[in-house]
Image 1 (tube, rainbow, N blue to C red):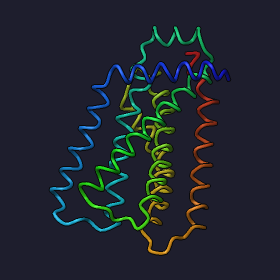
Image 2 (tube, rainbow, N blue to C red; image 1 turned 90 degrees about the vertical axis):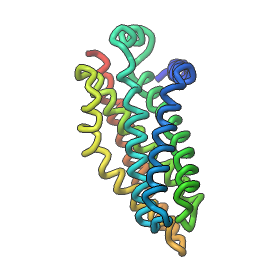
Image 3 (cartoon, rainbow, N blue to C red; image 1 turned 135 degrees about the vertical axis):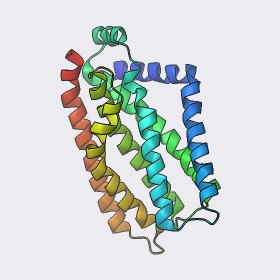
Image 4 (cartoon, rainbow, N blue to C red; image 1 turned 30 degrees about the vertical axis):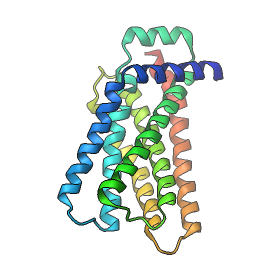
Length: 220
């Protein structure tokens, strides 16, 4: 792994995202409009369990819309150009870092808007925010790998959702279970640390799969 190549590729993605801000603003509009509809649908603030479930459903759709374009926007000629410049591990790591940073921003904005429209139902809001960041990071890693696979199958974006759902389901259930602990009046630190450790281990597994599988996709 060449850290200079990873940094250069990461900067490239950040510059492209900055120049094509319409995509970013489109996702923000999706978040705001969805939460406004939920605000109209729930005149009274929903209970904690419903609030938590709605948040993660929205996070799932945000991640699919945000991460799906990471490989699908790369043309065949551009991929061939990158093939001559960097190693496959450098390329996939740069994509994983970029999508993770993007999901950190999206998660922060969506949680702020969620609290603004539907109120705060979490007893430990800062703990919930940390769990939300971890969950967004986990979702981004899985869907980045799925985007890489789908990009090699005739640029079919539908494959991302088809392939990603069975893979993301264990992580999503783990994060939902973890986030429920932030609604308890008594903070169970041991349970939080245990579930957080399991989630991190699953992220490491996804990272290992990406590093192992992507070179084969890269050669195609």
